[in-house]
Each structure stands twice: as structure tokens, then as C-alpha cells.
Length: 466
Ligand SMILES: [Zn+2]
Image (cartoon, rainbow, N blue to C red):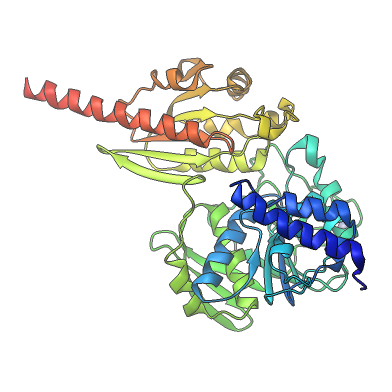
């Protein structure tokens, strides 16, 4: 493609802009790309690109999958560009390519790992052909932004270039069926003891055969529409899996991965099914890029789920777990509620959801609360639920609809003063379930809970002494 004058003005302007933004200590991961696209609308098509591009999209897990893939590649001395610190829409991807290009617009590295927002497909894929496109899963998400899974999967099918090889979650009947003409590789997790024959969730985004509209028969359900299904009338069914995780051993934190005729043992770094899916996705990408089992395991050992998503700490015999419960995203939130109820021992839950935060652009209405399985919190092991923050009354209504006894619920607008009412007696674990936008608040609440646990332990010691 002929580059032309506009391209160079856009490239050089963006490069100078990046330096200036860095001097001013401003975020330089979005505006250089935005500027370049403004000056030269087909800039993304003209800029030099690495030979191999792995793009990662999907509703949940794309950031974790990208971060882990990048960390393991870096640990094995791979050279690549990525948008880890940047945005995952067209301006962010463009910025990444600008910083990875020379002054003449040629790509300096041979590999790119790019997180791509699923709604940005129409603005990215006409100009950039990923070698591989990974789709982690497709669920209903923010209704105001994403409409429905059919809308998102339709966008992907329409815009994914024909030359791209897809790496898809074969346990997800929606994600596994995007762009059906493209070459594809499936990853998945073998049937688990915990899989059932009925769906426990409120939301299930595919129930009818997309080919003949007959009601699908689920061989087993893991959660929501994740599982294995077939159509009783036509040949539509879940695909055979190419990279299959099997023999999950949560006690020793190991699993096997079957591919072709080989079977390899990998370490699990989390017992949460969502993270196991992320790990299986990452291993599949890395195997395809040519890493060995030993290389991957050595680097996996150094991995941990970042603190802003999950943390645990023991204070005077009580455990505090912080867990990101992404508001507006009913499936992510329901998975966290499920994890909480199934966690061993008795617990108290502090829930602070903030879908009105300015970063959420005030877009959302409260409908997603009704797609979220608050019912999972109606469990004997959960002794107290504290709801606070901007959505405390919406959460309260939802908890009451879920049939949770009123005497278990504390509700108050102010998050920190609500925590004063936490009852520590008889609970082993305190879960703090927070939103994407409440990381600092989560830390403040955690700190307060630590102090409460310590002073209650001291008090008990004194009483013993007396
Ligand atoms: Zn059918």
C-alpha cells in the first residue's frame, strides 16, 4: 500500500506527541493513535505490522490471558509488542503499532500480542489481519454497550479476515461458532465432577440450535451456556477439542493437557474455573507459538493473579479475600458469587458494586443485576452480607428477591461505616467483592477489616488473661 504524505505526517506527529506526553507524564497509550487516525483515517492499514499477530478478544478473561501470555513470552526472551498498558480499541492498537514502528513506519519486531475489544472489530479488522485471533468466550455483558451476544458474534463473523486462524473456546457454543468459514483450533476443559445436567444460572445465551432452531440438548452444563450440547434434529453440536485440559487435580494444583497423541502435565495457579480457562487459553496460545511444556511450566510458577483481581491474606487466624466482581457483567459477577458460596468454611461478604462510576460513563441501567445470580449468595455458609456504595439499594432489592433472610443483610450508603457492622464471630473468611472502579476503596476496606480482626483478637486475649 502506498503510504503517502498524510501517513508520514500522522506517524511523525504521533511519535513527537508520544515523547511530549511522556515528558509531561501523561498517558501516552491512546492519544498518539487517536491523532494519527484523525490525520490519516486508514493509518492502521498503512503502518508496518509484525509478521505474527496474536489478537485476543472475548467477553471475559482477555486482559488476564494477554498479561499471562506476555509475561511467559518475556520470561522466555521473546521480543514482541503489546498494548498491555494501553487501550484495546482502535486508537490503542494504533498507538501500540506506532511505538513498535521505525521512523519510516516499518515494524521493528516480529510478534505482537494485542488485546482487542470485541466491539472494535469493524474499526480494526478491515486494516489489520491477525495471524491468530483468540476468543475466550462470549457472554452477555453491559447491555447498553454490547446489546446481545448475537450482535457481538455477528460483528466478529462479519469483520474477521478470512486468512485469520481462530483459537476458540470449544466449550462455549457461541464463541466456537464465530466466522464458521475460518480455519480454527479449539481449546476446552473435559467434563468435571461439578458439571450438572441442569443450568443453575438465570442467563443462558444459547438454548436453540442456530441452524434449525430446535431446542438444544445439553450433555452437561458447567455454567451459563458453557458445557457440551447437541441438536437432536440436525448435525449441530459442540466441537471436538484440539487442546483438552483433563484430570484437573485441585489438591495438587495440576492438570493434563491432551493434544494430538501427547499428554503433558501443567501447573494450575488458581482453583477458580474462570482462571483455569484463562490458563488453558494461555497454554494453547504458547504451544501454537512453539514454546515447550517445560518452558511454560517454569514461567507459570512465577505467575500469580494480580492483586486488583484477587488477593488473600490471613490475619490472626481469619482469612480476608478480595475478589473483583465486575459490575455490569452478570456472568463475571455470578462466577464470583458461586466461588464465594463454595469456598470452604463460614464467611461474611462485603459487596460494593459501582456501575455508576464516571469511568463507566454512567451508561448502565440496573437490568444486569437481574441477570446476575444473587441467589448463589443465599447459602448457609454465608452468615452476613454487607451491601454498600452507590448501588446499595439496588443490591438490597436483589438480595431480597433472592430470598436472603433480612437479618443477614446490612445495608448502608457509606462503604467504610457499613464495614463497622461486620460481625467477625463465627466466620472464618471475609470476602470483599468490589468493582473495577473501586480498587482504592477495596484497599481501605481491607485495611479496616484487618484492624477489626486484630483488635477483636486482642480483646479476646485480654478476656482470657482476666
Ligand atoms: Zn439443529
